[in-house]
Length: 124
Image 1 (cartoon, rainbow, N blue to C red):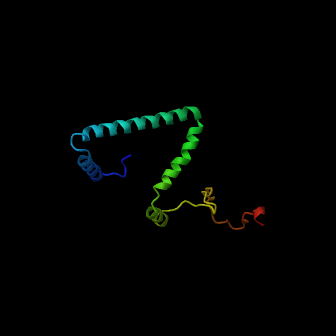
Image 2: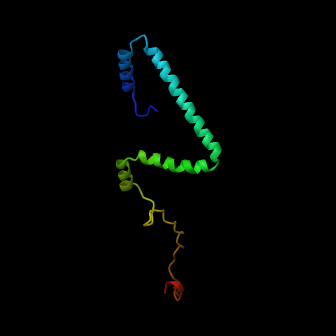
């Protein structure tokens, strides 16, 4: 919840609250705010658990796309370009899916004198 709010912002809010509410009402307002935030969290947790029980295994399949969207929200173009330019990329097909891994090639050896090269009828 407080990922983007730092200690400086919290200190500014407390000082502003001290000026607006006064020193006698600030502790009760902070207690009310804490109690309300805790109650909202309990409601959200209860709703998530109830949804999880009602949907069963389909809840996880619904949650996966939401996690993907959350990753997109944290997308850093600078990091993506750096990764694309300087790291060894995975081979991909034109549709964006990973290319199938190729089986290791058979070890090649020189042909013996008089030996015929291998013949592949599918290649002709």
